[in-house]
Amino acid sequence: MRNNRRDNNKKTEMYDAVCSDCGKDCKVPFKPTSGKPIYCSSCFEKYDNKHSDDRKPRRDSRRSNNRDMYSAVCDKCGKDCKVPFKPSSDKPIYCSDCFEQINENKNGANTELLEKIDKKLDYIVETLKYGKGRY
Image (cartoon, rainbow, N blue to C red; front, side, top):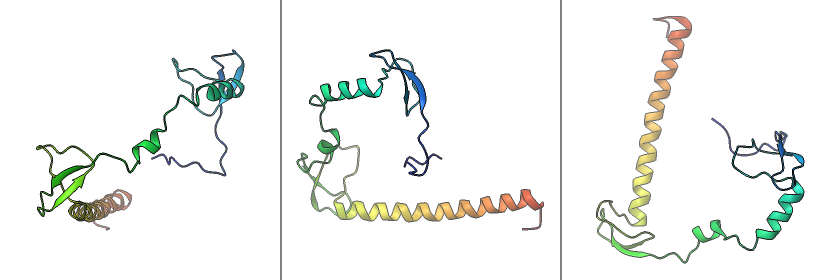
């Protein structure tokens, strides 16, 4: 499994590319794929500055506290609550307390299941390593 965090001690692998704007050879920190424009650092700066005003602050808008909230009734405890989505009849609705409780229970069940799987895998590895009857 790949770790998405960058390791500060590791140099980023650079790939050869040709700038889509000026045609100069350059290096980029990602593997170029066909159909997507590639820019050298100079052209990227020009392009980035030219279009920076057009960009929408996506991340901020998703985390905004100004979300529309909808009134609902918790399916577990019956308490009135507000939810950040339009309620529909095909999915259960939980207040924040019940939702948190349900997620805690799921995480606990997952931990138990993972521990069982881990023990079985240990047994399989030992059996393969040493043969039957030595575990």
